Length: 247
Ligand code: BTN
Image (cartoon, rainbow, N blue to C red):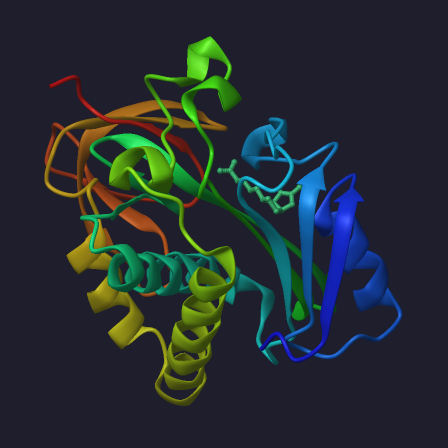
């Protein structure tokens, strides 16, 4: 991954740039990195602040030969690879909040946005958009984000080299992706569950169908979060915004 590298000073969104390259036939592993995004996008239609030179704003192209219903598994796979590589690089106790936010002490340090296209129920390509708050300082955050988000620099008290972090991540992802394609989801699931901060405690999940309260107990084979409801029933959840309990 990353052998085809496209570096930009400023783009609207690395997802838009990579989409165009993908449509033109770019190979798997193509990576778009920008110093700054003018219209960075987050999940659920939110904007993603991407100040110049302060973070890792990048999009990676995957072309797995898989049916479309595997894309939740790929989301979790990328979160695991990112979490493991950042833990190794920084020594910080980074955890995963389902499905794929990375947190330290309940504050978000990284987010992942997966966009995919499919033809006849098969995945055509996946744009894995990754934002990591590396060297942001307090003044780079809007006031309302300061209790929800933090950067690696703020946590460690020093600046980090972005290239090293990217290199570690790409190596870890290549390794796990290879295992996943050969052996399936089982080992990714085990790794994800070990890193998850959102298991075995009561959470609220805002789904397109309404709000659910319950205790997540693990992942299903298809990548859905299994939530135990108050009546004991186990409910698979595919897409939701998770609220952690106040502590
Ligand atoms: C989220 O947590 O809501 C996902 C954030 C994803 C941000 C990254 S930054 C690089 C890529 N380009 C974008 O416009 N978004 C993703």
